[in-house]
Length: 146
Image (cartoon, rainbow, N blue to C red; front, top):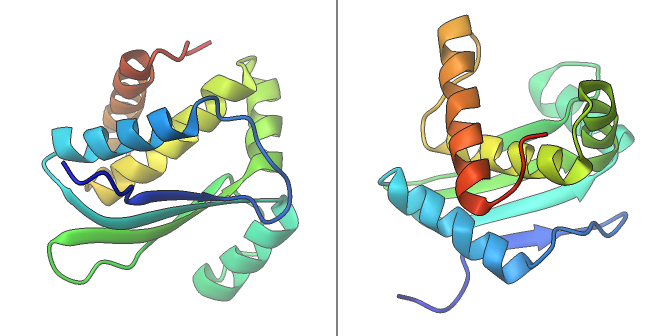
């Protein structure tokens, strides 16, 4: 296996405790392998509500903050993407859902990866399938879903 990571984390505004980052990167790579997808490069950019709102407005014409925006930049079979995550929004969601920040941040990280693997979340059936997959990978990674 290629020892060079294909998953990168960027923290332009604030650092975030993700535990063992190398382990998490390897796990994300395994997630793609399990889903039978190949990675070129995945960039996770952790930002705030102001930044993600600006991105949402500029590229998706939505004038609001959201927890995650996934840009699939793939050309060919290998997946390349930039995934923006608002730590501020994830923190608020964790609080309102009554779950730990650790659980919710990992759920959102896996959520972005699952979108790139072809999972959608517009219809109820799609949302249920996505939640099931998120829970599956949270459990495999050893993060409590509460």
